[in-house]
Amino acid sequence: MTIEQYILDKVRNGKVHMTLFDPDKQSVAKAAEMAVKCKEAGTDVIMIGGSTGITTKNVDETAIAIKERTGLPCIYFPAGPHAISTKCDAIYFMSIVNSTDPIMITGAHAYASPYIKKIGIEPISMGYIIVEPGMTVGRVAKANLIKRDDTKTAVGYALACQYFGMKFVYLEAGSGANEPVPPKMIADVKKAIDIPLIVGGGIRTPEDASATAKAGADVIVTGTLVEQTTDEFKIKDVIDAIKNRSGQ
Image (cartoon, one colour):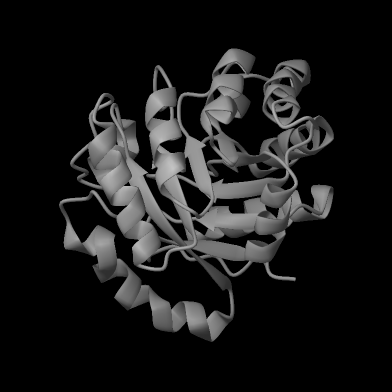
């Protein structure tokens, strides 16, 4: 089974939680230790990546350690074509559709795609939309940030991603954002598209997680939460808030 199909099957059965580990933010051993706690709490998939400080070495080492300890699928969340991992199970082949830099929309992809084919890692097509405040990823991607009250533009980008044939849409408020993507934006985008919706950035509490799931996100991603706490009960509370929304 492909990783894409694994996610789609999970989505059909309820809400999905993914944990994002930035290999530049903690040691390999720490990432593996926290990944075990996240698996026990109910996370479904591990994402590995970040906007800065990413190398093939730290991604590979983190992926190997997490997979050995948890057996969970690992998806590389790329910062660009410079550090593609051969140890992750799949890579988000993601276009930052509201970037002002063509490299972030299609240029890097054209450069990296022959190598992706050569190493045989599974590409998962995804449209990536950055919402205010955007944080580091917004700056690095040179994004024309979607304003928090501009649901019309978010819907337009998301629907365009679907029409381009992308398999997922990702609404991103940015790692470390002081608040998540607004529920109304999530709800309006979800109503407009027929492909799964991923939402991440600024989700740190059970209340944030529940509101994001209730608004219509199929997949909820948390990363800063794991970086900032060693409290496995807090992590479990957030994941439970997501899973319980779908009756799991």
